[in-house]
Amino acid sequence: MEKEGWGYFGWQGLGFECPEDWELSTVSGDKRRGGFTLDDGEIIRVEVQWDHPVTPFSLDKVIEKHIQDLQKAAKRKKVPLQIRRKIKMRGKLFREKNGELFEWKADYRVFTLICYCKICGRLLFMELFFHLEEKFEETLNRILSTLKDHFEKEEKWGVYGFIFLLPSGFSLSKFSLKSGYLYLEFRREREFLILERFSLANLLLEKRSLKDWFKEKYPSRWALIEERKERIHECISLKFKERGIRRWKGEGRVWYCLPSNKIYLVLRKSKREISSPWPEIFCHAEKGELS
Amino acid sequence: MRVKRLNRREMFECRPIRHPSLDWEKNQREEVIIEIPLKKNFWARLLTKFFFLPERKKINLDRIGSEVWMLCDGKNTVRNIVKILRKRYNLSRKEAEVSTLEYLRRLTQKGIIGLELKGDKNE
Image (cartoon, rainbow over all chains, first blue to last red; front, side):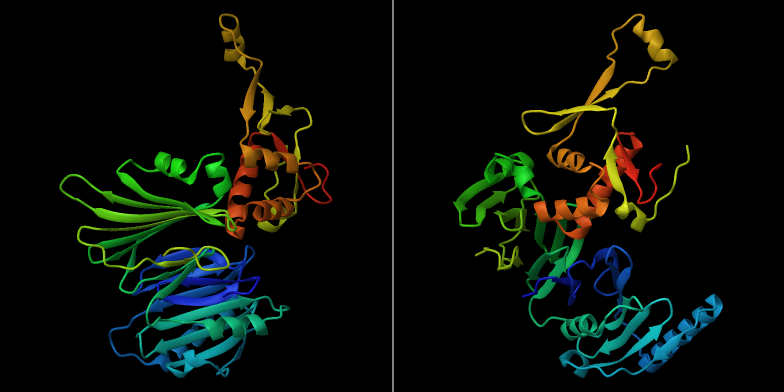
């Protein structure tokens, strides 16, 4: 579990612990090829890009090319550039990888990790930015020691503090990340898994029950099958069947997590029998009540 | 009037302050209602000859909007307001920042609040 002041970021099978305030600012691509950046409100802190190269390539050449590009850019901007190469890397991650971590200083102190994972075939390019006067050792070590670029079973996702374990085989098909509302839709063949998170739950609910709020928010095709109140969670379980040709069957769980002041919604839907397990959600400090 | 473009850091150091000549009150639900005098241009003046036009319009702020309004007292910086909302509603940094800045931007555009920069009493 993450310590105070530290959070977890996980996206497309890549995850690491990072300071809580480093949050997603841009995201692109998919699991095969893509990237994201995290910022702390002032500067970009992490920039990640990945690819799964199909044709053979030389990792050394990739690294050399990147360093040459850096030197060219520094020369063009007339900024002095210092590069410290082949920084020793520790941890399990680096035992199963070819790659190099190097540091360069210009306007910022930047650590660049370029590595290729023999297991998942991901070529990873990661840059961590620090101010020149900033203490960076602890942060750098923690990020790199917790960095994972593949998961053996369930993938751990984490975005804006919405952390969950995704059952294997699912891939992200749609998403919407808005202030106060997150929507992530995953697909495995003809099965869908939809996760939603609403912030400011106390204001959304006001004096209504979760059931009343849900009925108002979502169409009436849902049948409520269970409603229960726990110490910190108000939960409802749902089932639905769509009429007509498409005939989706679905199951859902909705709960109001008091400590995090958020409403969570998980929905599994399929045209066949639903076989996927529920994802595990860490809605507050402990695991979410999903079973 | 000179309009200064603020960068992000300056924006966070600003102290939002309510327009002193605006009337406002709280209703029973603790929501703020602001009364804004309507500007009368030529057409409005002409219309008042034939129709009733109210002198003022009322803006009803929601709960969070009212809380932000109360915090715009010239003492709290934008950074403070974001911090207070973040803690009060358990929001992530980005959630609190994006919505607060957007809300303050709208209030500023309408001229309901002003932003006081440190050491710049004329802004």
